[in-house]
Image 1: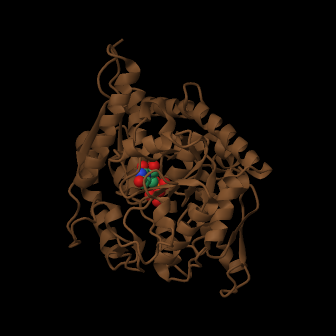
Image 2: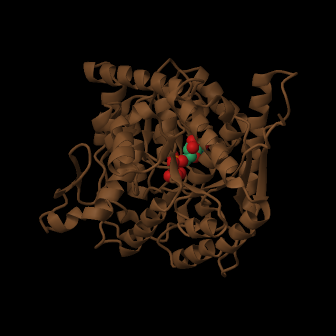
Image 3: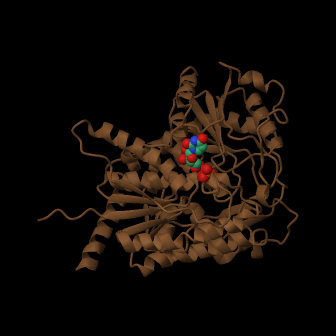
Length: 502
Ligand code: UDP
């Protein structure tokens, strides 16, 4: 019997690092299972992905040994970033700050990607497309060409279920209508557990109509999809997997944690990786807190100052990723000069050989989290960061800023008990207004202490984080639940191809 042609899957991620990185991981993962993968993106982002793919190929070659086959079958195709009169640089989402007038034009540019996307489908006829959930128009474009469209949101099923509940039931209409009470609590209906958010921790239609409408469109498009792919694993949120499949009747495949698949050991290059790892090598096990707010969040000067004070007060060693400087307000202009916020004595802590290392460039996050010197991760709870920490068995200090980050905090702190929050609230207020309360250094230091200290609570948190880390890695290994789900999706798409071709 002739060898069947390899399945071809197209990945079409949104152009922000937090979306591009897992898409590149997924491509490497499926390619390592014999699928031909193409990633469609714009030229600037293609360069980022290409270096990640090169590293995946190196890792794959090293695993296979000298006799073991060629490079992973991953192609990168580019479409020009639509010209809508935006300045150069916005092609990568880190180049633009939400809240500026450019957002409408940026959305317009994204909508214009529909045409080249459709052309790619017509010319190459992939067996399936995994399109970013943000590109809700991809559902119709794929349907026009008879290509099954899977969505990838890059969030947890829990966060997705919370948004689904919000959109269906809008508890803000049911909650006491007291705008002035920041502690008013909204309970989200129709979920497997009682889930409560403080006002200001989830999207509120009265505060952000645009985002609400966008989510409705995304939700509707996801329901028309062939199914949804999640960077998650069964043991992380079993009740929500069941809720999704049984109650909501949706088709989902869990393929995570993406950073821990044998076929997807890759990360974007980090110029200071060697220095950073050497610095960590000299620190005692579990003594360092790693601090990063991902690729999009920026802290205001007052927040930076308190964070620096918190690190001082904690007495722990730290690696702090601080690209750019303080955000100076809604325009998010960045102030490189640290003097307005740096507290007295801080410079001494970060002097050579001292207690802290401040990284001003792209950090080798996955390597840092998996270094034995790291005992905690102060994070904005971006979903990729959470999963990378979970897989590394590192407990978290949570400081969510916006979007699904508050949901992720809940999963970490309340469901799994592998972290402690600093007490953040006020969803998106950095964008909409500047009411966000500045969290004091004492609170930050306290949360770090509760996670990394010697007490019973810290011990229990560390034990649970290690346990969950073991489960995360097992899920990704051969025979694990995510490994099986990847296989299931591949087989299903193969039989679909046979039945369509017949
Ligand atoms: N990341 C990194 N180095 C950095 C900053 C970020 O490697 O200096 C990676 C991080 O490991 C993660 C991604 O970028 O994979 C950020 O995604 P996340 O969902 O955590 O946050 P976002 O940036 O989307 O808010």
